Image (spheres, rainbow over the protein chains, first blue to last red):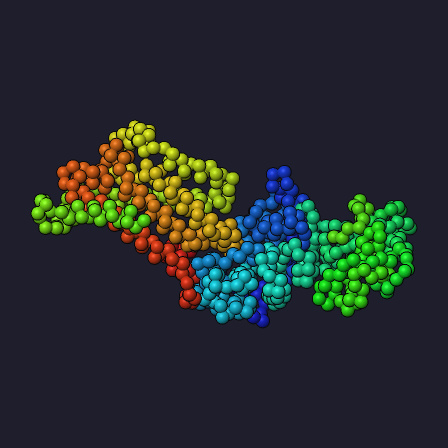
Length: 370
Length: 261
């Protein structure tokens, strides 16, 4: 039997993305619960990034979807079909791994053609499609090279082409950029997104790198202890985090003590609205983004709750992160590098806090930055 | 170091080419008579058959087991290692004491062929083969490669034969070479169980015709040496850019996996 695979070369759409639903997935390893009732629905053609610290269950979720592990409970539906009990080789899922996974004894071309061979695709079609896939990832000139003759980034691009060559229902990316250096990583990240948009395959991307997740995904799911803490567009995740964990995991956060009263929190003389609606009145820790803290100007000889001394400046390129000692607590602020240069270490400056809605985390000490 | 090995071999070769008397000229008659000594020929053939059988048995038994243990039940890898290394600690004479009744039963009820020694030789080569294969498996990321192949639609058999085995074939050749060397050099068990393999035949021949006996011993050593040289060439990593091939496998991988789609 010869399977027919739709053309998916450059500029054409391989398969309309399918809906993927994970329903109440649970997975335990002995006493450890890796997934604790994870539910997630991915729209056709959507790229969802699962983000979280090591051990939060994001890779387990991906492996369950790939069929590389079995769920203890729950269902996995791909395009409306229950694939929970299906073995990995029957799921039609393409996967790119964190570790380099090209078959070392095969050339790039042979690697890409492998999945098609498993599907008994005719040799001529296989040759054409493997060539198209390599062209899609910009490596058509590297078809005859073995894995050891390719750089890390090139290997991952071939792995992406290999995963896409089988015209998968779902594309799974398990931290595919983590072994690469920063520059290659950023370039390949953009390339993965370009290719994903081009082929339109529903994609689950697992990473612990918040910048990567926010940059590449249509929606980001932040996981903790086997549960999905928040799922939403990157802008929402960053600017309206649903929990203190999300706020602290995604981006740096100042933890400043304040007092909650009548639905707002007073932080060093600035009244800020609350994201949460159920916060009782009393002392609390407000989580404030560095970019919500600005510098009003020098404050030589002056005093006040938001007057402090610059103790460190970290150059980040276009912006710099400035650490200010307010006496009882340190505050991070993110400024344009030219502005930061005007306030070297030792300078007394006056800060202001933008009145954006803030989250409250009351059970942990103040003065830390996460 | 080379002299340590070469001097005795040269001395053996010198002895095997001596004539009947001190005054006789050098002769290769002892070497030429190897093929003309029926007992010796049959012993050589039997030993080669045993080497082949043992190697095949070792590969069939160990390779899938070790890959499976590594992938699916890594918790038992220590137990498997212990079992495979155990024969090293048991002296051949003790092994024979335990095996003698078994072989008596086998020769009475099953077969008295010398090839039945393959069972015990399989046990004998386990420690060497296990270590070699384990090193070969450790050199590749078996888990990731097999998961990648599985996600691309490969069955477990295909994963093993077309993805794992082609990437550890140097280790497989090494394991086979060691097995062949152990089998060709084995004397104690065959002798005590009254089978005539190469080493037993050499020993028996040594009582009647010492020069032929030594010639055979040198020939066996040369055979092992040739095998090592062949292996060192075959085992070299390939270099350079491969040629685009129509099918999805190349070189040794294609030979191994070609018929298993």
